[in-house]
Length: 124
Image (cartoon, rainbow, N blue to C red; front, top):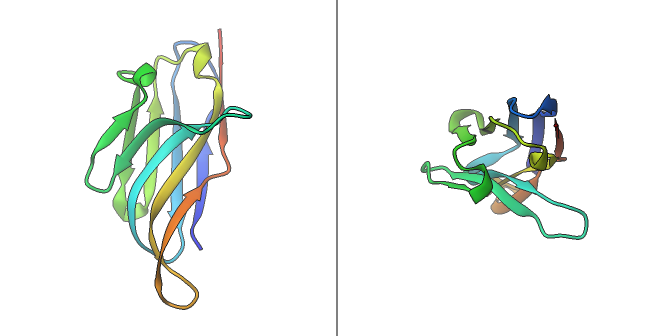
């Protein structure tokens, strides 16, 4: 299996910055895309930012110009630098990665894994 471990987040004042990181581990063959999402109770997960292994990036409109996603493919790690934070950015941020790993039968298998979520709270 593939595991994702998130770090970063916390409490910050409006206008401040926070960095998130998410590392994937396991018998990973390749990661096609990693990203960050929000999920409010009772709602579907919402994209914040994603990056593919070729460097294609997508951002939620409200974070463009303030958040920067990057990745280190060699370390299977994705980062989210969050600047100029606003109270409405307060949420739990979930890391996602999908790609291919070697399963217990030593066959390639697709994975689509989520992290445990990390809280970002922006005070006004």
